[in-house]
Length: 170
Image (cartoon, rainbow, N blue to C red):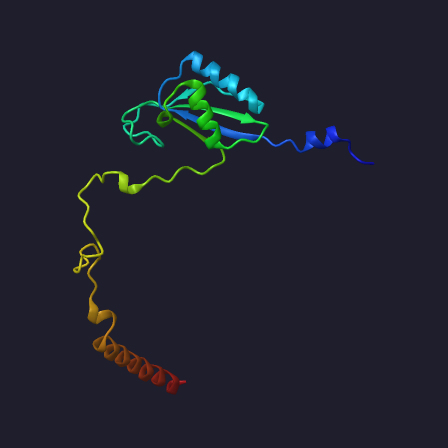
C-alpha cells in the first residue's frame, strides 16, 4: 500500500544546520530581528549567543583587531545558503557585514591564509639554503660512493670465506 503525500513529506524533511558568528555583542533588538527574519526559513533550535574569550585575531575575523565572538546555532527546514542568510541578517540586524559570518555547521573549518599571519620568529628561506643548514650532517663515505662500495664488497668476501670454512667443517 502506498504512502500518502503527508507521510512522504514528513519522512523526507531535510534540516539545514547553520552557525552564525558575530564579532560584536548583539543587542536584544538585533537578536529579535534575527529570530523574526529566520521564521521565513522555518527556523528552529535557535541557541542563545555563546561568547568566546577576547582573542587578538579571532578566527574568521582577522582584520578587526581584538574582539569577542558570539556564536549562534540554528536549524532551518527550508533551503538556504550561508551567504544568502548572511546578507539578509546583516541587513535585518543592522550590523556591518565584516562583523557577521554564517556557515553550514557541517562545513570544515576555514583554512586561514598563512601569508597574512606574521611569523613569530625570523623566517629563513629554506629553498635557497645551499648549505642545508637544518639537515643533520651525514658521513658520505660511510653510506655511498666508491669507498662505501669497496668496503661493502670486502665485507661480502669476508663473509663468504667465513661461510665456506663453516660449511667445510660439516
